[in-house]
Length: 97
Image 1 (tube, rainbow, N blue to C red):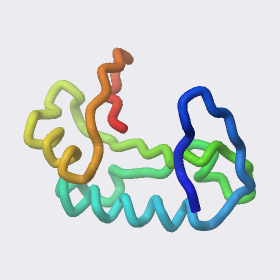
Image 2: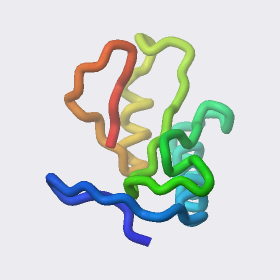
Image 3: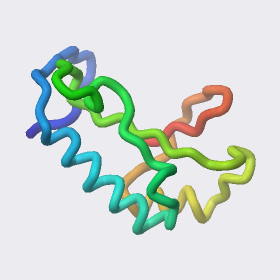
Image 4: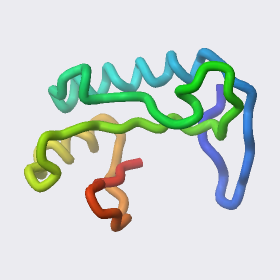
């Protein structure tokens, strides 16, 4: 399974259960590094929908009680898990890749 897209690439792939498997793997890693509870980390987007063709990107949302309380240690934990904060300005969101 190859995840990701090159710059300026648009590609859809047929659904594969490997997307769910990859999400579960990443979720476990995030829980280990961040100490966040299981229910706070969810698989979203088209790869989360069984049977749907999708871009080969696993979208994950992480819920927190107060976005203003997200601190440097939590962001550092995401970094240790391989996620870096992007300089994207979206109200009510912190974007990591």
